[in-house]
Length: 268
Image 1 (cartoon, one colour):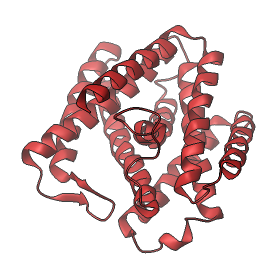
Image 2 (cartoon, one colour):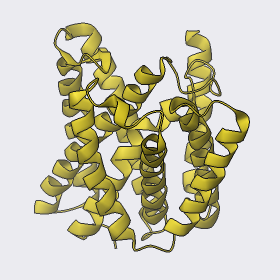
Image 3 (spheres, one colour):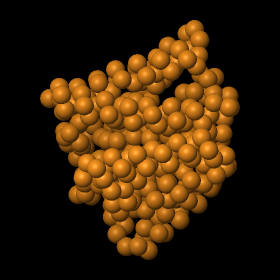
Image 4 (tube, one colour):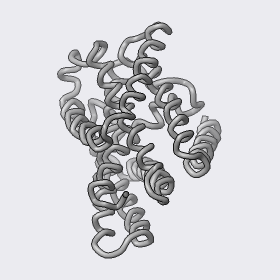
């Protein structure tokens, strides 16, 4: 199991790096759209759309909305996503109270659109920005992977206080602080290499905020999986589950990270 997980993870990372650094933004956007389509298929299963026809309809609907979102102002899409994730925080904190409001129902389908479309807009905007765009995308993915790894090992070594026991019993406050420390050091070193003056501190802060939202993205998907009574969103990735299980943190982190870069002027 561990061997399959390591091999799958290595292949996934290599493909991601190749797509980020090797593809023009147009084709990078198409590759992302494919991942979003797979994520939509998996999300449909989480909210009770169990037949292939229902899942296919939802996937096509999401891709149409993805196309429509490409014509909307980027800042508006990202700002709306950040507000939406704050609402998601309320749902996660209150779970299991209020769960009948969002799945399986139209509300659950709408939440899926909100979860999957803004990160596509954010990552494509980031990749297509200035000459540093692809490296910012790579930095964001590496930051999330680092945070997950640090949280896992810190949680295993010192974890005792549950972060969200009703949603994801395995996550602990000690794991969170391990992730915060790792991301702070990573962001500081990267910031010193890329920026000067007070911008370095600002970059570290926005990375830490992004980290907190990435955890929220993970918890929101865990909430829907718990409601659906499943461990993984799918079986596409051996040892890892589905695509949603790999990008759940990114769905919340990407809009926050890109909006912060745009507002701070770090991304032109």
